[in-house]
Structure formats: C-alpha cells, structure tokens
Length: 168
Image 1 (cartoon, rainbow, N blue to C red):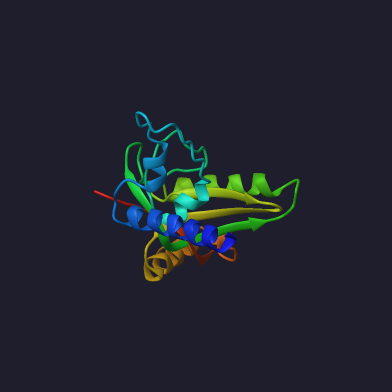
Image 2: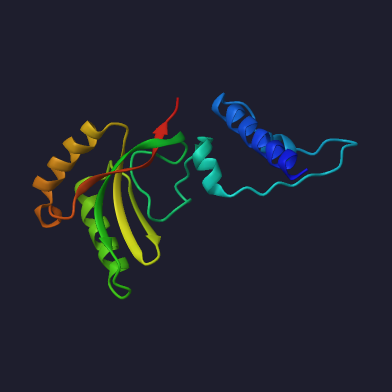
C-alpha cells in the first residue's frame, strides 16, 4: 500500500514538472482553482520547488530591497542555472552584513546595470553580482570589475548559481 502511495506522489510531482516546462498551467495551479461541485483543495508549495521547476516569475521593484539592475519593474523572467560573481562572503556576526551592504553600494555605483543580491544562509552572508548564462560572460565582467574595483579583487570569483533569464 505504501509503495503505491509513493508511486502516486512521484507521478504527481513529475506531471507538475512536465506541465511547468511546457509553459502551461501547473497541476498545483489547477488544484488550487475552485471548481463547482468538486470541493476546495489548497496546496501550499515552498518557493524553492518553484525555482527547481523553472516557473515564470514577474520581477517587481518592491520584491526585495537587495536587488537592483536591468531586470526592471515589470520584466518577466525564468530562473535557470547560470553564473554569478561572488563579491563577498563572511561569517562574522557583528560585521558581515554591514560589509556586504558596503561592497554592494560600491558595486552598484560602478555597475548600476548589474543585479546585486545579498543572501544569508546561517552563519554566512554572501554578495553575488549579475545574471550570466555563460561562464565566459561572467569571466569577462569579472576581469573588468577587478580593474575598476581593485580593493575587491581578491574576493571576486565566478560561481554557479540560479540566475534570472528575461523572457519576451
């Protein structure tokens, strides 16, 4: 009986992925839609699952105070695997957040077209820059940043990350 239940959930999850990849309405959206005579189902899904599936998002200027850059206030985008430049990483409880914000301000002043994101995954604060689909693009920007901001040069390097790809 448990085996059948696991198979059902695996098929349920895979069907959601297939629908999401085809750009159609996901099974979660369909389940959350109210239908006359069928009762109500409310499925709560973690945001990290949406990132894995590659669901379309709409960027908003008010979604996060740490984001800036060329993905404007009404740009559609898809989250995909790509590359970012890591500009800071620190785990000092008293100073790391302020250092990340200070370096973010430096980078924004020099490169206003690049998105900057500060993340906290206990106990580490990170500052990452850009949304690059290829390592070559990230490396080219990295070498330019090292020339423009020599004080950050030793901390700058390319990392794989989830990036935003604009859709038309």
